[in-house]
Length: 332
Ligand SMILES: NC(=O)c1ccc[n+]([C@@H]2O[C@H](COP(=O)([O-])OP(=O)(O)OC[C@H]3O[C@@H](n4cnc5c(N)ncnc54)[C@H](O)[C@@H]3O)[C@@H](O)[C@H]2O)c1
Image (cartoon, rainbow, N blue to C red):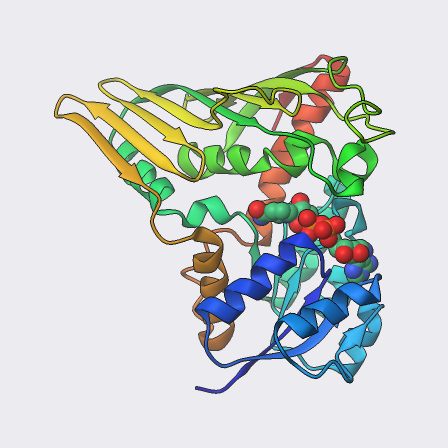
């Protein structure tokens, strides 16, 4: 098998997982470039994959694109850094896997989506949960079921990265983090008709939490009506760090119930009893294998979320922010 040349734009926490998955799960990968505005981070990546950094470290994505010839790019930059880099990658015709959220406004995301479509470029977006065995079990199970109500939740702390604590740089917790559950809801129940979301601040004190300047919502609750008729309520909270919080999803069917613990377990209760499942193979690895397989063969069938899918989930989460700000129901 010929080697696949890969490069990384953004050498922080998340692309570290993609580097790791390339090393663990994929053969014949050649590391040709590492780009980060903080150069020492790019050097650390080169060290990690044990390649000579000479000619492979770049502070500016334009230099990476001018001086290397990657077959595929992994892009994981903070949410507010989208818009300029993607057109340059697309212009070069290089397939890329991009982390969510793909932008913080629809105009940017739609502009990039149009360029991708014009070029017919292979893309993947980092919705790792679609690749879990548990998600697939849920999707198969509800195929012939009547689903009415669904609840979803993401409870978590405040991530350490500086950009997370401000709406302008992260989009807030719904857009940056809980977009995973919103995307999973779209993956399972189809497209939304409308959303109404209430959110609030006042519990988290940024200074006390060690994150001065904090201005994201502490919590919110979104009610989404799907075209399929499903009504789904999704909780998001970064203030709630006590014991017993359970992120995940509950799906109430006419004759059964699915309880999903985020990225770990699934319990289905129906007339045949209780069926319990645990997470199988780690999902980011499966996702990255699917992307590289597509790059190598042109077969994109294993990619479960491409850029356009990411745009749709972005639209849903940005609509939650709009609804919080305006108090209005947002129709799609
Ligand atoms: N799919 C997932 O499960 C998952 C998990 C964590 C983070 N993420 C997403 O990944 C993205 C990155 O998050 P992270 O945790 O790696 O953040 P991070 O801050 O750890 O890393 C981002 C890196 O990008 C670099 N950078 C910023 N602007 C750049 C530019 N113009 N060119 C090159 N490098 C640039 C920064 O210096 C930093 O090293 C975010 O969108 C986040 O939401 C996804």
